[in-house]
Amino acid sequence: MGTFLGIYPKGVSRASLIEKGAAETYITTHNVYPEVPTIDARTWKKVRDYYVRNAPSKLPKPTVTRLMVSQTFKAVRPAFSLQPPSTTFVNIDDKTGSVTIGDAVSGNVFSLTPQLSVIRRDSTGEAPAWITSNDEARIATIMGSFSPTDAPTGKVVWIPSDPQRSISEVITGLQRPVHHAVADLDANGEDDIVVCEFGKWTGGLSWWKCKKKGEYERISLREGPGATRVEIRDWNRDGLLDVVALFAQGNENITAFINNGDGSFEAETVLQFPPSWGSSYFAIQDIDTDGDNDIIHCAGDNADFGPLLRPYHGVRVFFNDGKNRFTDTLFLPLHGAYSAIAADFDLDGDTDISAISFFPDHNEKPIRGFVYYENEGRGTYTTSTFPEVGAGRWIVMDSGDIDHDGDLDLILGSLVMEVKGRKDLVDYWVKNAIPFVILENLTR
View 1 (cartoon, rainbow, N blue to C red):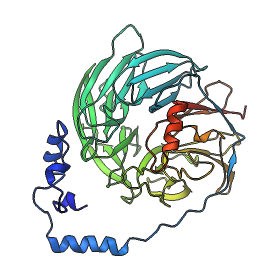
View 2: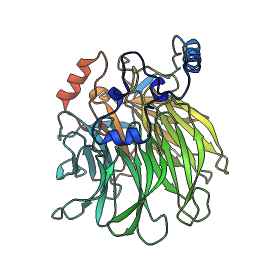
View 3: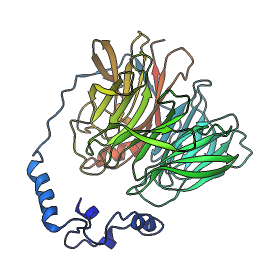
View 4: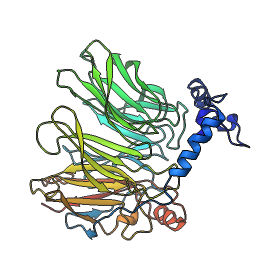
C-alpha cells in the first residue's frame, strides 16, 4: 500500500517498481508511484498500524455441502489437445452446436464441429479473451499479454467468416483488454464497441464509436485498472442503451453508465464491493423471473497474495426490487470462484447455477474446480461435480445445446498456472494436455 502513496520500504526504489518499455509512460502519467509522499510518515504509521492491529490471525472456513457425483452432467474429453493447456475463451454456438476456443500461448482461435473436430484455425495474437459474431465476421478481443502488464499490446480484430480473407486489426494500442460488447450506442446505424482494458495499474473502460465501417473514435467512460466485463442494456428503461460494467483491482464495483442521448454518459454505482473480494465475473439476468434485471456475481480472484483461502469467495445473487436497488439474496461459498451460469439445467422449472473456480483448495478431494448447484427450492441447493474435475484448471465457461437435444450443455476451458506447493498438479495438467472439456447434459 505504501508504495502507492509514495512511501518506499528500505531497499526498494520507485524506479524498480515501474514497468519498463511502453508501459512506463502510462504508469508515470497516472502517477501510480508518486515521486514524493502524499501523506506524512506519522499518518502512514497510523494507517499501517491500524491494519496490522485489526487483521485477523486466521480466516474462518465457510460451511459447504458435501460434493456428490453429478447425475446431470457427463464429461466428454476432446481428442484435440494443446500442450500446455492455456485456454482463454470458450463458446458453444446455440444455432449450430459448433465450438470455438481461444488459446493464449499459441495465439490461435480454433473452430470445431459439434463432434469436436478442428475445422479452422486463425492466428490472432496472444490470449484471445472474448469473441462475438455478426453476419460478416467474428470480433475478437486479444489481450496481447495474459501476464499482468500496462503495456498497450492488446487489440480488437475482425476474423472474416470467409477463411480466404485476411484478419484485420480494427482497434490497437489497448492495455490488456479482456472483454467487449457490441451495440449501436448513438443510434447512427453503425455498431460501436465497448472495451474493457483490465491493464495492471492503469487501464479503463472505453466506448469506441464507429464513425464509419472500420473507423473508430475512442471515448473514455472511466480511466483506471480492473475493467473486467461489460454488458449493454437499457438499464433505466428510457429507450436508450446504457453500459453496465464490473471493475476489480481495488475499487471493486458494478457501475451503470447511463446514456444521456447526446453522446455523453453519467456514471451510477450499482454495487460496491470490498477491495479484498477479488471480483472476477458478473452477468445481468432476470433470475427470479419477475421482469427486472438481477445480478449474478463471482468473487474469487486470488492471484495477488498467497493464494489465501477466503471465506467471502463465492457466487452471489443480487435481486432487483424493480427500481435498480439490489439485495444480496444468495451466497454460495466457493474458493476462487471465477464464473457462474444461472439456468434451468435439469428442466424442472427453477434456476440452477453452474460455477467454476480457478483458485480452489487443491488439497480438497474432490477439488471444487466445478460445482453444479441444483436448485431444490426454498433456497436450498445440492452440490455435485464430475469425476474428472481435476483433469484441468478451469478458467472460462460457456453453455449451449451442443447436441441439439433440448437441454443446456457446458464447456469448461483449462489454463495451466503454477500452484504453490503442487508441482505435481501442474505436471499432470501439462501432460494431460486437455484444453477444454464438454459437460454433456443428460437430462434429455
